[in-house]
Structure formats: C-alpha cells, structure tokens
Image (tube, rainbow, N blue to C red):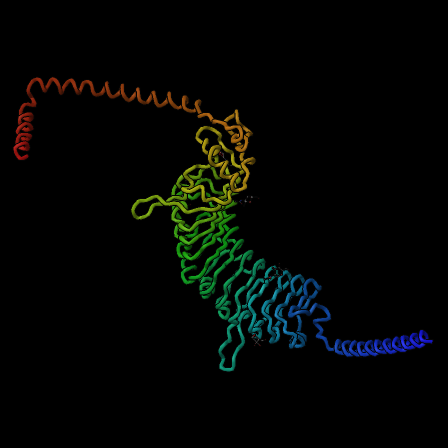
Length: 486
Ligand SMILES: *[C@@H]1O[C@H](CO)[C@@H](O)[C@H](O)[C@H]1NC(C)=O
Ligand SMILES: *[C@@H]1O[C@H](CO)[C@@H](O)[C@H](O)[C@H]1NC(C)=O
Ligand SMILES: *[C@@H]1O[C@H](CO)[C@@H](O)[C@H](O)[C@H]1NC(C)=O
Ligand SMILES: *[C@@H]1O[C@H](CO)[C@@H](O)[C@H](O)[C@H]1NC(C)=O
Ligand SMILES: *[C@@H]1O[C@H](CO)[C@@H](O)[C@H](O)[C@H]1NC(C)=O
C-alpha cells in the first residue's frame, strides 16, 4: 500500500515535471518563432556575408557590384567596425553610408573606378586597403571628405593606413590625399608611376605625419629633390625593385629614416660616399639583388645607428673594401656602427675582412654562405675567430666553402675549424710577383749609377780645381755667424 502510494506520487511529480519541461519548450519555440520573424528584417548584406561581432566578412563571395547606399544603410545599428570585401570581382566602388567602419578591405577585386567622395561618410575610417585592383586613374576626389554646408571639407582625420599597391596608376594627382593628412602609412608599390613628378611630389609632401612610404616596383630612376624635406617623421622607406643606377641624392634629406630598402636596383658600384651616409638614424639597410660590383672605402660610412645590414645575392659583388663601413669623426677618430646583424651571403667576395667591424662580439645574427672564399693564410682569422663566433650565435659555417686554393677546394670553414687547419700563404703568387719587382729595383739602380756617375765625377773634379771656393767660404762664414748668434 505504502509503496503504491509512493509510486503514484512519483508518477504525478513526473507528469508535473514533464509538463514543466513542455512549458519551457513552448516558450523556447515562441522565442524561436520571434527570432525567425526578425530574421526577415536582417540586412540583405548579411544574407550574403557574415555579420558578426562588429565584422562584416564578405571575402570571396563572387560579388560583382559593391553595395548600394540602401543596402549599407541596413547595417546601421550593427556597429560594424570592420568590412572585408577582399577577393571579389567588384569593378566600381560607390559611396558608402555613414557607418562606424574603421577598417575597409577592398583588396583583390577588379576595381577600376572609385566614386568621388566615396568614403566621405566614414568619419572613423582608419585603414583602407585598395591593393591588387585595376585602378588606372586616381580621381583626386575619391579620398576627399564630406562637403560641409559652409563649403569646407571635413577631413578623414582618422585615416592612418592607405594601400594602393598593385594597381595600374601612372600618376598621383594633385591634392589626392589632401583630406587624409594624418596618414602614417602609404603603399604605392607596384604601380607604373615611372617618375615622381612635381605634382606627385606636392601631393606626397602634404603628409607631414607619414611614417612609412612604399614605392617598390614603380619603375623609378630617380627621386625628386625635396621629396623628403617636409616628411619629417618618415621612418621607413621601400624603394626596392626600381631602376636606380645610383643612390638618389634626395635621400640626404630623409634623415629621420630608420629603415631603407634598396634591394633589386641596377646599381653597379658604391665607390664613395653617397646620400646614404646622411642617414644617421638608419638602423636597417638592405642592398640585395643588385648589380653591385664594388663597395669602396667609407661608401657606407656615417651610419652611426646601423644595426642590421643586408648585402646579399649580388652575383657580381667582388670587392667590399675593408673600410666600407668606416668613417672618421671631427678629431679624426675612426668610427664604425655597432652592427648586430650582418648578412653578406651569396655575393662574389673571396673573404670576410676582420676590419669590416670593430666589435665582432656584438653580432647576434649573421650569414656568410655562398661566397667563393679563398682559403689562404690571409683568411686564417675566419677559421680561428669567425667560425666560433658564428657557432656561438647558432649560425652555420658548414655552408661557407673554399673555392681556392686547390688543396682545400670544396672544404667548408666548419671543417677547417674542426681540424684546426693552418692555412698556407699564397707562395706561388709571391714568387711570381718578386722577380718583377727585383728587375725593377735592379734596373733603377743601374740607371741611377750610369746616369749619376759622370755627373759626380765632374763635380768632384771641379771641386778639386777650386771652382767652388767662393761658395765654400760663404757657406762657412754663414755657419759661423749662426754659431755666434747661438
Ligand atoms: C586585406 O585582405 C587581404 C586578403 O585578401 C590581406 O592579405 C590583407 O592583409 C588585408 N589588408 C589589411 C589592411 O588588413
Ligand atoms: C565614430 O566613432 C565615434 C566614437 O566611437 C562615434 O560616436 C561615432 O558615431 C562614429 N561615427 C560613425 C559615423 O559611426
Ligand atoms: C661608380 O659610379 C659612379 C656613378 O655612377 C661613377 O661616376 C663612377 O665612375 C663609378 N665608378 C666605377 C669604379 O665604376
Ligand atoms: C667573381 O670574382 C672573380 C674573381 O674573384 C671574377 O673573376 C669573376 O668574374 C667574378 N664574377 C662575376 C659574376 O663578377
Ligand atoms: C642558440 O640556441 C640555444 C639553444 O637552442 C639558445 O638557448 C640560445 O639562446 C641561442 N642563441 C642565440 C644567440 O640565438
């Protein structure tokens, strides 16, 4: 009896609880229904793209058109701060609504046209990526701000980062960035500019806060004077992959630079000081993949802040003068930069000279592989000092191979070090040189004797005959006077 009642109670409780659960489920269903009904009001854009967490992700959606103002308007209230439309096929970029967008990525589309005043409502826009499109002409008003009732223009004052890289721009029009005057970063790489003309210079020099300017692969042969005069905060400059055959003189005004990339330019020699020596704040310099044949004494002198130096993949670079980094201060004291990283791999140099640096012990990273090293006694220090140094910084001397002389050809510096090899001096070269110099000396002496002998004979004879008597007396009396005076 007691058990039956208990069972009954349990079953009643069970029913109640399931009813409760049903009730909960019901409410949940209602919520679901409410949600699905609001889903009908979700912005059109969010049906194609992901709208989550302040980010509109529209990458690779095969879009051909950018959105209309109406479509953009539907995003109001979603607090979208980042829009990524990269990897579509959009051909024309039209005006975007007043939204709190801070980052807009339009990279990898087919944009040929950007509407005038396209970003005027995006007062918080800070990063704009238009790289890898098909822009040929930059209509200068594309990047202008909102026209205010008093016919002033509200600048896009938050803009910091603009990339127009990998387009087809031939010119930079006047005032193109006039309302983005706070830009810190500007990438114009891989546009066929060919030349930075006066107009472009004017446009670029209106960016007083610019920190980084990328002009790689723009077909430049020269930089205009004054380009850097008002870019007083420029720290990083990439002018790699252009057509410079000499170091552009305009760099001597880029004294705030701490990074310069001069890779992939057809420069053939750095015989003497260039404008690079003015870059006293430069911390990293790149000179790789050039046609350099020679770097002369002091050519890179004056770089007092240099820490990282890349001179690599220059197949014709055969001579680096031992004093190439060296300069003198006003007192004539020799100075070197305190290099921490030195990369001299894959050139055509036969030695690493101990005088390249003053403090080899400060090096924390280096590479010297793939050079045709001559392993004679002149490079003994490389075995005894350089190899241990490379090993200490976790580098490898196994890929530093001797090409000369014959007996150590193909042997690595790591092996030379392991076997405590004493490198022999180039005897043959010495003896080959000596006969030449001997002949010269002997010849000189002979000529001297034959030419001088008759002359001396004549003088002696004349002397003996008293022809110089007057002269002798005068000299004697003069020396007597001098003695008196003393
Ligand atoms: C824009 O998107 C591309 C990928 O398509 C990416 O490589 C690039 O870094 C993005 N740009 C910015 C500024 O984040
Ligand atoms: C820009 O940011 C400010 C501050 O976060 C905000 O008040 C303003 O509404 C934003 N502008 C737009 C167009 O959303
Ligand atoms: C190095 O280049 C400069 C400028 O192009 C030139 O005047 C000089 O003659 C060159 N020196 C050598 C040794 O080629
Ligand atoms: C490399 O240097 C050697 C002499 O050390 C020279 O004969 C050779 O022509 C150089 N190679 C190139 C590509 O300049
Ligand atoms: C070299 O490698 C060791 C072990 O991997 C590491 O502890 C050390 O910090 C490295 N030294 C340098 C200079 O990178």
